[in-house]
Image 1 (cartoon, rainbow, N blue to C red):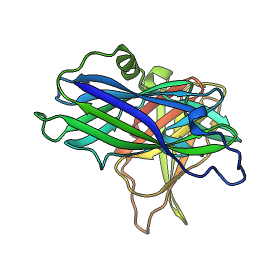
Image 2 (image 1 turned 45 degrees about the vertical axis):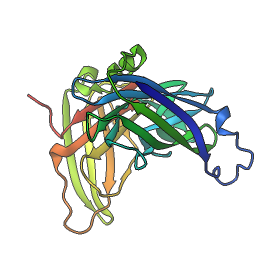
Image 3 (image 1 turned 180 degrees about the horizontal axis):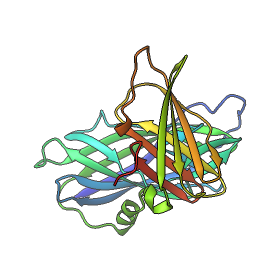
Amino acid sequence: MFRTLATLCALAAPFAGHAQAPHPSEIIEANMRPGWKTDAGTYMAALHLQLAQDWITYWRHPGESGIAPKLDISASRNLAGARILWPEPRLFIMAGFASIGYADDIVLPIELTPIDPSLPVELNATLSVGVCADICIPVDLSLNAAVNGKGAPDGVIAAALTHRPRDASTAGLNGISCAISPDKRGLRLSASLQMPPQGTDEFVLVEMLGTTMPARVMPTQRQGDTLTGQTLFRTKTGGSIDRSAVRISVVSEHGTTVHQGCALSD
């Protein structure tokens, strides 16, 4: 049996200077979709969000500005982990900043891993997100699901699982180089990609997997077929960067492509 529910459970104060912010129920509608038990023994469910016109919410990384989503599953039972399988986001230019996220109708698949596969899973979680237009409002979504048994296939969830960020090779990436240089605030990692334009606006997100170092993304530059993005990692003296752990995402208004590492595979 799969039993699911999502509600708007709390609203923090809107950003300063906007006393007349709309109620979150006017902006975002949230519903949990029941799913199925996978061959791996996990459960696949999803959060279905519908946003009002001209409002967006954010991907796992918000870009140059925005509110990064956070999932708290600490009140759940028999749940070892919950992983959001983020669909391909798009780029939005808001107040002159590059933001990565979604508009309109979004389905976020969530894979639930039980502690004991023979027992039901009770998901009692809070997903904290930002919703933005000309103002940004932080919203807490209460996600509740009781899952047990096989469940049933869901075509909407299955479709969302197929719309993940694409490999950058499919977008014409044919060369890449990374440069690491010291900065008084840490280490600067610059990634230059040889690839044709992906859209009217482009943003390069350079990340390092597994790091706990604070990072700040820098503006993206394009010169001809060379697209360059930079990130400043705030490190203490002697910090290092594993080039194989570098993940580079290129986001435009048409979608997102991803490349792993600072070199092309043979």
